[in-house]
Amino acid sequence: MKSVLLIGQSNMAGRGFIEDVPPIYNEHINMLRNGRWQMMAEPLNVDRHVAGVGPAASFAQAWTEEHPGESIGLIPCAEGGSSIDEWSSDGILTRHAISEARFAMETSELVGILWHQGESDSYGGRYETYKEKVCTLFNHLREELNAPDIPIIMGELGEYLGESGFGKSAVEYKQVNEVLADVAHSEEHTYLVTSKGMTANPDGIHMDAISQRQFGLRYYEAFLNRTNVVDKVDQEDGWIERTTNRARTKNEEIFVLSTKFANGEIHFEEFSIKMDNILERK
Amino acid sequence: MKSVLLIGQSNMAGRGFIEDVPPIYNEHINMLRNGRWQMMAEPLNVDRHVAGVGPAASFAQAWTEEHPGESIGLIPCAEGGSSIDEWSSDGILTRHAISEARFAMETSELVGILWHQGESDSYGGRYETYKEKVCTLFNHLREELNAPDIPIIMGELGEYLGESGFGKSAVEYKQVNEVLADVAHSEEHTYLVTSKGMTANPDGIHMDAISQRQFGLRYYEAFLNRTNVVDKVDQEDGWIERTTNRARTKNEEIFVLSTKFANGEIHFEEFSIKMDNILERK
Image (cartoon, rainbow over all chains, first blue to last red; front, side):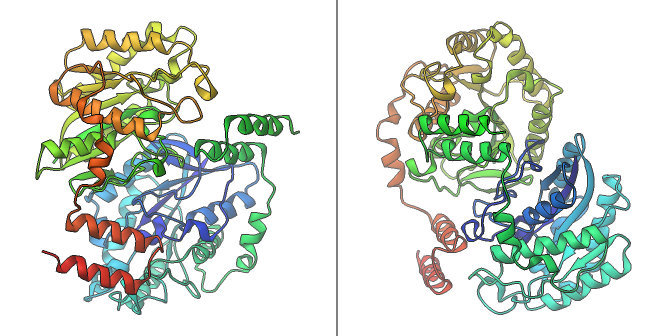
């Protein structure tokens, strides 16, 4: 199995409202739990009780479509509200992410890192020292995880920042985005994805669920082609609908049915009958 | 801050339905996320997307009531479906739990371990080797975490097992409970809590939310008095109602309000006005 590390702050963890997009159930997408792999369900990066949809689920779905029969594992280590200073080499977030990645790497090959962070550094001139700090982090991770040339994909901060709600204080997000572009330009195997057209939750800081699905596809395009993504990608149009209409495998049907039963939505009798029906299917 | 490690299988993680009991919000109860502490909200042990209410929340609430002004942190490492063999010293669950506990111990003092496991070993004569395995685990944890004499509290398997649903196959749960009693008898600093009267979700295997609240109080009684708990404890009666009626602190009000806003339940204007009201309170 291949695996991908998710780090950064809340928009990597995900705060899109779960109910705003159809769920992604895919037996070839896993998430790390207690050092082991489980079939993914959102919220997958539960840094907070309010975690929701981030970019990783659609990234992974797009990955599986280009890698039939293969599986991908997501290593959720993003932490809401964290500043770049909290991602220092000796900081607990970084040490914990390395620890989680190493557990994952006992049973998978790390093939990429997805990064989204910077809202907490979009004020007070913090962008001036951002490049040095983020490059130090990336180099440290490459070294510690023995992954010198895997792609690290960064996402731009949302264009909606600086305007309203909790996003109002992020007045220097454009400067941070310029620094991210500079990093993508100067650092090998490091790419940037545009946030063009992405929109926010009513809080003005968190990317909404539909945008996160699209953002994940851009992350995947950058990952696949090892290139910056400067505009929306073709497959964004109608992607959510196409993915929703995808036929579920037997294992995915069992997962969905078991979820309903575990949540008390159906009785054991109904569960048993439907399970038998699934198992009898060719 | 003090901290407690949660290990075992699904009934320690918790599968009680969240909506069946009032939430516990307490600024003195934390949960470990990414190696750091966050104010607790359930589900706190998200080993699965169907995680719900376990015994730890009411355990912690009872702890804070006896330790005014102090804080407790919960380290969630229970893994649904795990057998005792999966909790071997070199198994990934055990190594991961030790790793998480060590992150927690950078900023807290480990004062106890809560264990609930055995449904996955309640058939085929597995109880015959259970004692040796669980004692090996406990000794290994005590050594690795440098905690030779902290209490380890075990909970009995539910009396409802062996009857229906997913619980039907757990036909030897009584034998496992006898082994647990034997462990509590022979091992120092190790105590057992009765499951008397506890009831299950419709799946016949997972303890329901109300039972989990009560179970957590028994775990606390065993922890506090360093004794086995052989019957229901006095404070179970009316505990949920008393806890619900507890006045919230300013920080707890902010937490609840912020949750509503983050989930899109209220607009920014309403959020701002209510936040100002909370902040102006004495």
